[in-house]
Image (cartoon, rainbow, N blue to C red; front, top):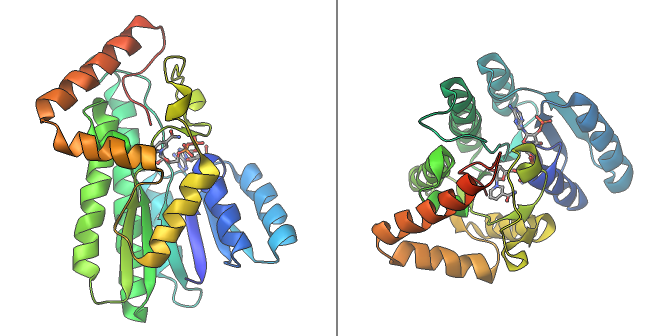
Length: 265
Ligand code: NAP
């Protein structure tokens, strides 16, 4: 896969992607807003794994910043063999009474940026006849829990369509759909996780290892852990009315607690 570019590499799953890819001897390009964190990580990765780590600080809600990352992906002098569209956030608000500018930022980060970066990467990889794109979705993409579910459903369908279009080109597209995973996600989004059972939680290490194994095998839909494979199967089999009832029940739980959003995972 050669060099890997990881968005959201300063924390959580992205940080874990960076470590596992570096340990597997891939050079990495680290993208996120927090340049200090990325620079410290790059030094640690280079020292521990003997690879080259490049820092590309960017706010992926900013069109000019997204274009800088896209230009890096199109650079044939320094080919990127794996793009991991991972950066994301939880929105701590209901849609109707919430701030629509915040909704636009979330859409830009979790839909527009992966779309533009996938376009840049897929074009360059297709020319070279090899490469892989890994998009981070969520099991929430199968539920009806706020616009976050809609963004992650888009990521899933988009990735499947990309996989169809790229068939036979040597380039693969994979979407990984984690369940609740211990990262900074819930704390940053001020999401109360008190009512989540401990059995629901996954470790970032296992999620990332599962996703990268599926990328290497060319799997399109990746769901790490047996628990969430079962949850996903149930969500696909039951009537959508039942999924909406479940999503509404979770929303009611959220409404009972202060500062708890309707979206998570
Ligand atoms: P996290 O620990 O909060 O990390 C989020 C990463 O995204 C950080 O590196 C952050 O870096 C970056 N980011 C946020 N806003 C950004 C922006 N505007 N521009 C560039 N980078 C930005 O969350 P995580 O759990 O690892 O989330 C990673 C992905 O997994 C997301 O797509 C999320 O939706 C998905 N996911 C998470 C869970 C879960 O339970 N944790 C479950 C399913 C799916 P900076 O702040 O430095 O920019």
